[in-house]
Length: 255
Ligand SMILES: [Zn+2]
Image (cartoon, rainbow, N blue to C red; front, side, top):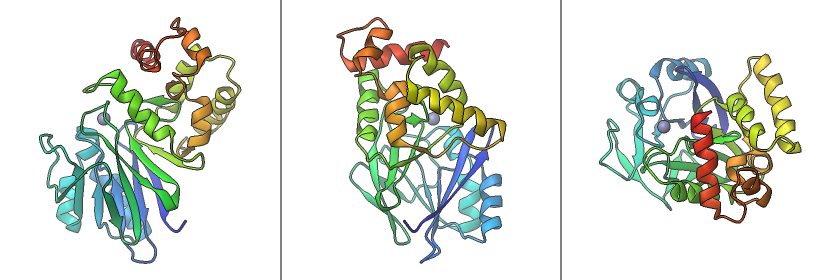
């Protein structure tokens, strides 16, 4: 692992992320929720922004692109669906494409459901997954444009990544997610362990990100819709995992 990754807050509960290649000095911002904190982080590190890797078209992920591009003339990579309003795109990317940030490379994974255009960036050699509003720690994004089966497939795609993958998601929602997940799996030891950890991190005003994918697989109820005890807990024993997932997501919407 050679990359340096910085995590900092943007807007009310978004994460800003910079990934930097020390060998070439290339630096990418994953999304651009707002310019201010990203500019401040770049200045703090003495880094020059070379790329913005956009995950999806929502305003709280693209609002800072204009200002950053004006200052750094950086390359803007965005999802293939060019019907969505993402400003100043230089290159469209899709499932299977490999994106270079200096010498670092990321695989583009199509992860639709939250939006139809949503993609995630997997830096395999860094064990770093930037999955924005598809997978959260102990949660997942709202299914706004897609369907529950579509979102479940996207989550399965992420779940298949190695356990040592560090998950860098789009929002600091972990505490609320833990509270909700405990209503379905109150006795899940991995979830209880994560609950303790999150309480301590938040009390110290620290981010709960990154989390380890191996731990998410055990503790995140949205990745566990195909576990029989979870189906039973939501009254859908024996039903397809996508239906169980949909029920859990509906409950979270109402929580
Ligand atoms: Zn979003």
